[in-house]
Image 1 (cartoon, rainbow, N blue to C red):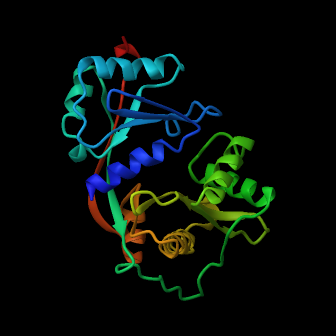
Image 2: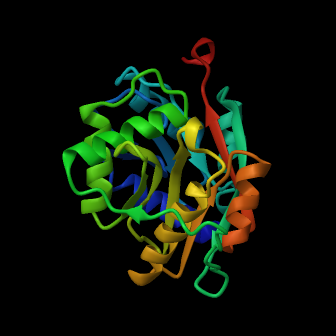
Length: 256
């Protein structure tokens, strides 16, 4: 599964608005933000980068004023991690990823009925979801035109976006899933506003998105979790551990 997830990562990076390929790496950039979560690179499976390749990759980020950063499944390109660490890259995080297939998907049961899950269609609904996710993840900006545009691009680009309405007509929580590549898709950004947690919103949205991607022909959907609580939610839906992904970045004081 690591090879498949890494091939997906490469294909997903190539979908970014700006893409640079150098030395066995694919760097994808989103010009409307300097967030490292939207601007990073990933290696081609089996890459064996030289010192020159790594230096060229660093320069690609440096000329844009961005943090040199990578996300990848290390077992899919075992020569990459040592090369990056030799250049001064350090670990940001190591995340386990979970995978769901049509055979393991389980629709969650709710004692009070499932929270109704909708697909945003209007700018107001996309903005409400963007604001809800910002609140869920503690972002300083409630919503932005760029955030709304990114969510809309996912939905209109072959992926899926889902949300649950709040009683006041706004958004209680939601998430998105990428378009399918390499027979799999990545579900990410599952967030619920603090006032609405504990009501099954994350489970309902995750199940709806996963089912939507299977309806589009995906052979699997994968995600990363942020803690034991969220992992239990995903496992009840049918997600199972399959591998790990490594996040590396080059601290400013180590940049050449």
